[in-house]
Length: 131
Image (cartoon, rainbow, N blue to C red; front, side):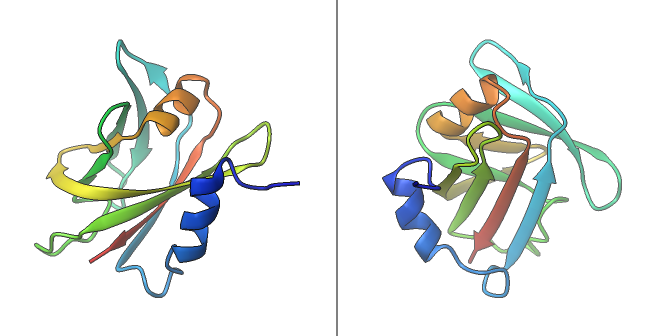
């Protein structure tokens, strides 16, 4: 039995840094996604207890970080690993996304994460940022 969503997830899981190597690690618990026309939105709280929106879209892969979720200290990380477990199957999906910017919300561009969010197939995201 394969525990990974696809072969890419299996490969990336092996290279994903543990929590000690990652410069920033955030575990987000998303209560539910709301579907828009070409995106889904979820809400989480930052370390100050303020609500922060997560926007997940399909398209060219990338991630725009939200500064109150990640302690960036004016650094521009190169990429982030995003991992989640699919509720019904228990399969692990892992993606390595280039960091393309910083916004007031967390913005993730990734087709599989988008399609699974539309189906409300996961409710947690483990994001590990690497300088």
